[in-house]
Image (cartoon, rainbow, N blue to C red; front, side, top):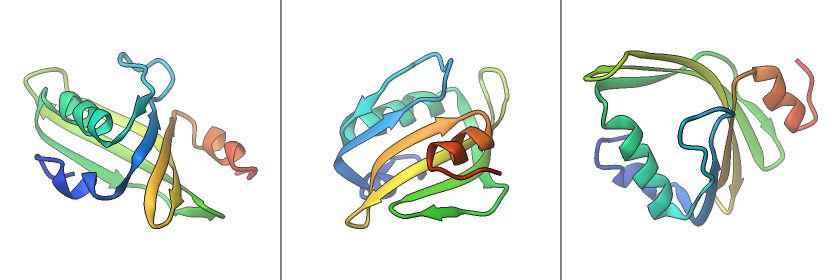
Length: 115
């Protein structure tokens, strides 16, 4: 995501719903583009540098896509090195919903697949 969030913003459906990973300090859900972008910006404020690295294949299941990633960040707070799986629901070419899972197998089970 670019620092201003404008490029990412356009990928989201106006009524997007983002559900945080279990146990995340800001549990959400976040509804609508403005709320989602505001939350992404808030999470990034503690980092001078961060990167999201895809570490596995994409699983495309109907209108849903699962992807395993590592989010790394360094800055004013503690460093982040978080592995998780994002599950996106895509409708009309836009992200309609996003859910996050600690275990990749849990994300695959959510769409009816087993690892």
